[in-house]
Length: 89
Image (tube, rainbow, N blue to C red; front, side, top):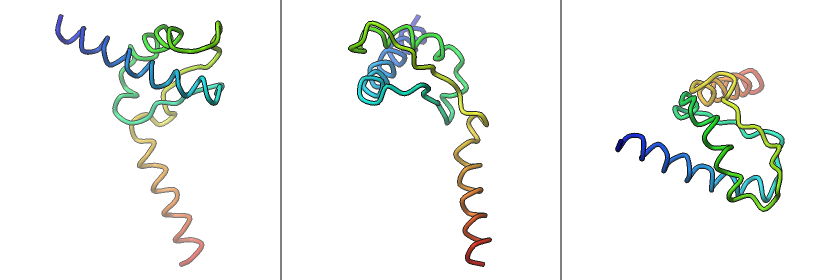
């Protein structure tokens, strides 16, 4: 029960934060990276909750995991580093 309550609280707080992004930018998709991108329940829970906090009657924004999961940040850093090495030697 405590773990479930913690997860619901986390999802609600994430929904509030992402609702601000939706209200300001109206993105087509929001991509989650890092370790939390592996928590599959968030992809159903958060969009169901953010409608409470979005100013519009309809939200078309999709919530998706990063293509390379929790390794996306590291892969991006390696890609940028390799590009600098190739460019500057």
